[in-house]
Figure 1 (cartoon, rainbow, N blue to C red):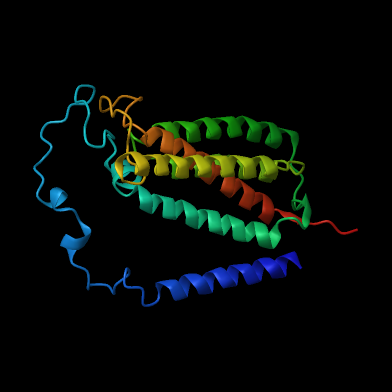
Figure 2 (cartoon, helix red, strand yellow):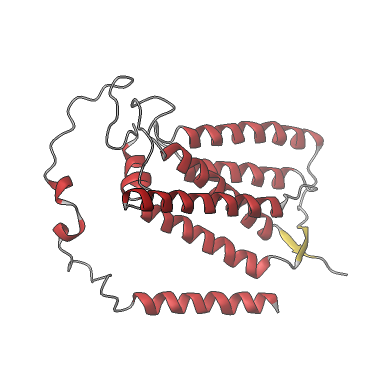
Length: 246
């Protein structure tokens, strides 16, 4: 019954999304949009930033040394909220279809030995630390919340494949995902109230290249990393579980 309800709910949401986008004046056909209407003249006519020195230049417009991060988490932060929402809907669909009926994890086709279990746990720590590093350095180097969160989830997958007795605590992931997502939206609303823009950076950008710089970008990436990692880990748990037959 729960699977049927989840399927009907997902189909209903899909129909609503399609109908709301079809013929919507805010989403014109490709090629019918004037660039000047979508891009601020300030960015079209702006001058070059000039010389930027790592560890010296202060209070840049974005403050991030990684230009991709400047676009994704600063200039197009509202779009990033939509990307996170897509992942949330996907995880919600899997939870509605597979969650609740699965009482035990699927058995492996092979029996993991002692060395495999110990090695996987050691590698788990390395992957976890690397994922955290990627998240906290997203404003300095390529990376950020999305790849870092995915790495954290891959560490959970490794434990599943290397230990036939491992079962992650899905409830803890749900709490983590909910708290991180809520704080992300709250930060965006605070920026909207203070400056009129969603997720507007309201903290000092500091010196480019420093770990503590770029204002709210490291905080946002940390929340995104926790949210992405917990959601994907929950999806992994649902897919690697099966119904208990009594």
